[in-house]
Structures are given as structure tokens and as C-alpha cells.
Amino acid sequence: MSFQEFGLEEKIVHGAQRLRYIDPTPIQAEAIPRILAGVDIIGSAQTGTGKTAAFVLPMLSKLKNTGKLRALIVEPTRELAAQVFEVCQDLSHFTDMHITLLHGGVKYENQKKSLSQNPDVVIATPGRLLDHLQQKQLNFNCLEMLVIDEADRMLDMGFIPDIRRIINYCPDKRQTLLFSATVAQAIESLASWAMVNPEKIIIGHRQSPAETVAHAFYPVARDQKFELLLELLEQSHYESVIVFCRTKAETDKISSWLDTHGHTVAVLHSDRSQSQRTKALQEFKAGKAEVLVATDIAARGLDISTVTHVINFDIPQNPEDYVHRIGRTGRAAATGDALTLITGEDLDQVRSIEHYIGKSVEKKKIANFCYTYTALLDKSPRAKSSSRSRRRKR
Ligand code: AMP
Image 1 (cartoon, rainbow, N blue to C red):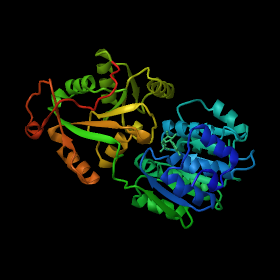
Image 2 (image 1 turned 180 degrees about the horizontal axis):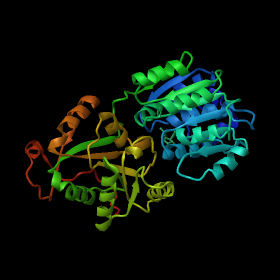
Image 3 (image 1 turned 90 degrees about the vertical axis):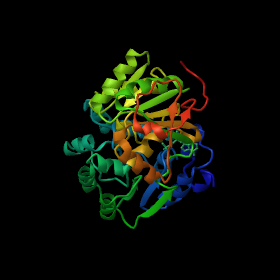
Image 4 (image 1 turned 180 degrees about the vertical axis):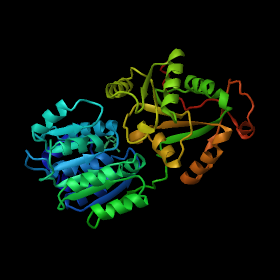
């Protein structure tokens, strides 16, 4: 089916065409007709599958008359909220809809001004949205549609009580859409409280990493992790790369270390100011910074098509985060490489990742690197290069 055949408003179809969306992706084909029919949806799909447009296209199409707040999208992080805001703006390009973005870390004044202009759609993170609600800067009297995106991330970040508070401000008669990579008990109970006869849409196996990503583990002694990271960057033919670390302090340490070794680096974690976070993403997207060093704040949903490599400097604590992190590359059917440094202390996580994704990940050694001994190396075959051939930028 084409976008026109779904019965989407013509102006919205034109918005999709402007972004060169020709054929609907599987989640769009499943979700759009149901959302247009007014059904509550619990959706789960692999990252990079077009999930955002799957709810934004029918949502915009249903909001025919402008001038009242009728749709709310709640996102767990500022970066995701800003990304979804951009998609909404792009897809509503040929309409006169007013869309407002609300998130923390920036002054209230511009947000209040935007709210006073009666937005049709609000995209928000939970904390700042509740602030505005408590200050009566907006109300949901005319709200028709609520989207709770990345619900499992909301759960990880402790936002579920805030989400319940937000839902309490919403009218009972509304359509609710909930998207979540996994549906834990807490999310099931949120859904059964907040939704009416929701239909489930599951596209692909949630455990599986994108098929377009090649992944490998790199065993190393703990005190050689920095050197191995540098060498992996040296030997990878990357266009741009995200390096994931476990803590904010480590993120800062590694970024300054890479900086002193000649890499142009952007840093993203939650202790940075909003202007620093925005600037880091802008520089990374524009190619001014070739490496983004980040905590798991960047693991979900960020859609940056130039990312050819993800390096896990620290193995993620839980296997779902592994799948999310490596999903930052190989987007929209492009290929990508995911490299994970592992030490003897990481074996439990290695096993649980392999169990979760249902296959063992190749353990590799790189050439021309002077390894100090770790028992992990005994079983690792030598690999010539960490990556498939790609344009070398540096
Ligand atoms: P998402 O899963 O929402 O992060 O989307 C992943 C990427 O797919 C984004 O860059 C979208 O612009 C792109 N995309 C979404 N829908 C389509 C479509 N129907 N055709 C082509 N690209 C799309």
C-alpha cells in the first residue's frame, strides 16, 4: 500500500514525499491504518524502522482544524524530544500547524511564549511538561491523542510516576499510543490502566540487533583499554563513530584523552548543560566532530545516518542496552560496525548479551597491537582489521 492509499491527508502525504518516503516501512504499514481508525496501540519495532513517522503521519492527518492542543508526545530524553519535534515539523511542512517543544535545561520564557500561541501538538519530556502543567501554562481539555514513546526507557529513568501524573491531566476520552522496545510488567500495568483494548504491533524480534550491523568483541587487559580504543579508531575506516561509556566521569576522561590524541570529539551526558548537549549533537551531525563520546543517554532512538561505527568502551550493563547502542549505526539499511571492548570482569555481561541475541559474538584481536596478557586472549583469533573497507576520513 502507498501512503495515499491509507487515506492520509494530502498535505501530510506531501510532507512524507518531501522527505523522500516512497513506500511505508513495515511498522508504518501496520500502525497507520489502525491509528487512523482510532485504535489504542502498543507498538514495538527495531530501531531505525520508521517508528516515529508511523505515529506522526496518522496523528497529523487526524488533526484537521488547528488552534487547540490536541496531540501530546512524551519522550524520555531532550535529544529524542528534539528529534521527534523535527520530524513533526518536516511532516507538517505543508500545513499551518503549530508545534511546540518542551524540555528541561533551557529557560521557560520561550516555551511559555510558544504555548501562548495555542500549539496543535506538544512534544515534551516529563519533568518540564509537569512544570508547565502545574503553572497552568497549558491544559489538555481538547486533547485527542497521547503518545508515550520509548516507555521502557521511561521506566529505566524512573519516569513512570511522572507519566501517570501526566495521564491524570488528560481527558478519559482519547486515543493512546505506547511504544516500547520491551514490555515489562510495570509497562503492562501502565498500559492496562491508561489504554482501552490496545492492539499490539510487534515488528521483528525485539532481541535482534539490526541485520545491517556487523558486531565483534575485542578482549583486552583492563589497563590497555585506552590504547586499544585509540588503535581501533586508527584501524577503522569510519565516517563517524559513537563511543559509549558507562559513567559520566569516564565519558569526560575518554573525550579529553581522545582530544589530546588528535581526534575531534563531542561529548554527551546528562551533567552537561543543555546548550553543550545541543552543540555536541549539532557538531557531530555536521561532521565537525568525528567522534561522539556518550553515556547511554545517546543509546536510544537517535537517528544520525553518518554513524558507521559504534564502539562500546565499556560493555553495557544489560543486554537490551547493547542492542540499543549498536542500533545507532546501520540505520535505514546502511551497514555499520559495532565493536565492544571486553575484559575478564565482563564475562557475565558477555554471556547475557550472547544469550539475549541468541548467538555468540566473534572475539577478535587486532593486528599490530602489543597486547599484554589476559586469559581472554587465548581463544581469540587474530583479525587483520577491525572493520570492513570504507572511505578513510583521517
Ligand atoms: P525512526 O525509526 O523513526 O528513527 O526512523 C529511522 C529513519 O528512517 C529516519 O531517518 C527516517 O527519516 C527514515 N524513514 C522513516 N520512514 C521512512 C520511509 N517510509 N521511507 C524511507 N525512510 C523512512
